[in-house]
Image (cartoon, rainbow, N blue to C red; front, side, top):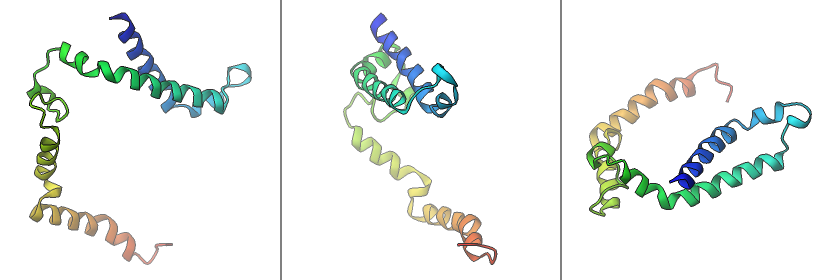
Length: 123
């Protein structure tokens, strides 16, 4: 259990560090990091994610969370992952024939149209 928990901790730490890597350049002197060092951290982050991927499903399963609570296509025990993804996509309001057209038209009229039709636009 300790190795996977250590891996998860390292993934979390590297995620935080790499998402805010611009801050690492601001340190002065020996505390600052080079582009090569930051690229190394990002490489290690990707490597750790790949190694933890094998353990991801067993870890989630060990928590005993029912599928209904997870609400995940990928966690379906029946194996129909792609069918469930398609079903979910088709049920989204923006993807429906009637309501989707209205949502897209309203969005265009409210946000995009005024910018394109504005006389002050500098495009």
